Length: 455
Image (cartoon, rainbow, N blue to C red; front, side, top):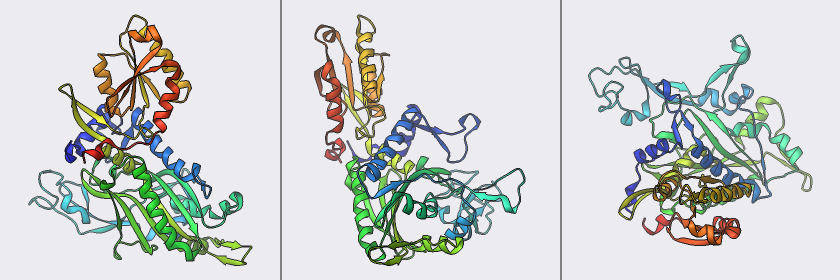
């Protein structure tokens, strides 16, 4: 298929049609760039997060898990620099009452005439740009006063730095070692849309890897390659990924080196994950503001130092969107159009669909028996008996189900079923008694995106 078969409109339509992702508060007209995940979206998102945890924790011995609080002591954000410097330049339009990012005016449609850009019509009355803090502010307790003001975290990283001392003690780790967590963050920013690419609340997969200062550069290079490999191992086409080092004027004030893993979304090349060498900035800042020493003492060498930090930081939503875009495809089967998500089987929301050929003659009973057995074995299975077998295959293809099991007349005679492959469309007879093991084998097998052969 041509490389441009996927568009953002097609992905959004599929997600809404099949209940992956849809606008939040839709009955009230929605709320800016806020989305809900439906059944298949939750399963897909959980599989993405699960694959990240597997790579960080299950397959390694040098990283531990953490789940820090969303609301931290307000001095956290003073120390991190978020209170003073976490801002965007914003412009208000007095005519349409909308707010725009000053650096995004070239892509922001006018509030009254969407065919024009903001500021292009005679009616537009734009203010001067002013800096606007991106943190959501709230308060603790029934009375709102200066002493009760707190913030929803704009990143998960700071909670890791606050708990560095605790983890050193209970985890019995020494550098190099990492602390990983997945959690919600919140940024009150003006976004240009583009579905779940940038939202007000978002889930992050972040890991802070603490290393001896002299080893920071080599570990930064190590994590650049390791994180790129994670995406390609899960089926993202290598020619749709790019590692882009930040220029000097792009670097955060704390970073000596940062590179973005960018993905070629339908909207163009955009950041998928950032891998930063944060140096010792965060630990030193929190030590200064809190008065607590945040350092490591090596008992063998007698050396005391503040570790440097390498941070791979990925967004769950952006990762989900990249996997959806990369998997989306269209083809024809028997002259009928087919929309299919060619997802890596490890990420597919449903692993196997169990389909009785007929809704009679004992087919449903055997199919439900198989479905129940697969569920007990831990496979995400779905039973479907509605409509023709062709339509049911199409429904499963559309949500990315890699395997379909069909119960037919022969099943009743010899206890075998047909196993259909989503990508190759091949069908093979398998004994019911061997079905679970065969599906597990196929799910564990090395997988290569079928789209690699077609671009």
